[in-house]
Amino acid sequence: MERFQTIRLAVVFCLGIAATASEARAQSFGVELHNTLMPASGGMAGASTALPQDLTSAINANPATLTQFHGTQFLFGGAWAEPTYNVTHDGGVLPNVGDYSAKSGTPGSPLGNIGVTQDFSELGIPLTLGLGFISDGGGGVDFRDVPNSHGTSSQLVIFEMTAAAGVQLTDSLSAGAAVSLGIAFYDGLFVGQSAMVPDYALRGSVGVAYDINPCTTFGLYYQTRQHFVFDDAIRLEIAPNVFDPIVRDVKMDMPDNIAIGIANDSLMDGQLLLAVDVLYKLWDSAHLYRAVYNNQWVFQAGAQYSTGCMRFRLGYAFAQNPMQDNVGIDAGGVTVGVDAIQYVQAQMAAINEHRFSAGVGIVDALPGVDFDLFVGGMFEDSERFGASAASVESYWLGAGLTWRFGRGSCCDEVAPNCW
Image (cartoon, rainbow, N blue to C red; front, side):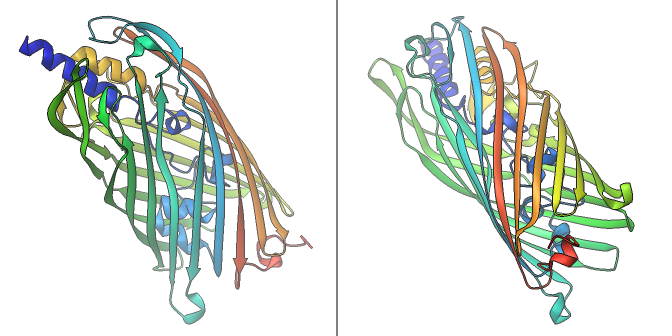
């Protein structure tokens, strides 16, 4: 009997953490977006480690590239991500969860990104500072209208308040560092008593950018793990209207990330920019996610063709399927069974490997104001996890405006002959 109650607790707990990332993850890598929804980088599949085309991409990824933004610049961007997330469960041995096949009722997500940069070169200081409010990741699923799901539903949202600095060390080399205060809101209990629980956690980034020659730039950055603990997040229902007296915490980490990138604009008389990023995500060190994900490789490639004021962009990203074949038994600090973890995997299936994007930009759409627009999508993919299966597809679109003041806003400097 004690063993059965332990299994029941484990299953209900897993129901609580199952959906922490389905929505924003529909176009991300695991649960993190990595500039895929930034106004300009979004059209290039997020490629931005060496030569970002919008300032929020520099703040959010490689802070050394901030030195590429001159004068005072302010960006306001927003995006909409719309996934289709389906789960089929064949019953199996999970208590309280029966056979069902349904589409998640969670609507799409509006996601915003705001940033400002200021360079101090006019004062003889080779420094650029950046501040940003970034939508980092999150999402949710909702199967509460499906009786056999026993109330499967959960939500997670993560925002980052980031302060970054880039220093021009030589004519060719810059270095940078950033610190982010992450603000996460988590509601992970499907059955029992819960509330939307907040937590805060710090994260750091360091990076370099190096001009190999006048047309080629290399970038590298490292981003630390971010550790959240959602205190007293859930009180589980162990039987109908009977609740576990223990109020449980949930541990959740964003992983360490390592990225390298290269960009070149030598083709077509400098009108064609090609950029490639390689990202490695260390899920094995991240609480909660290490139970369901392996470490993951991500490849991002983007192109931008410039003519006059216009920028035309294309992008492709390949994200290695990180799903564990041999799942663990601990999730978020609570020991659970294999069947329960496999059910969690079906709710957190980061299985889509191919993503495509396109975008357009107008430099000085108004004097000193740039406009960027992007769209993207990924085709349906599916995978089975024990008694459960998931299929995911999605599309996303977004736009942004950048205001440029002082040095850097001159039309002749940015896009000659626009006006």
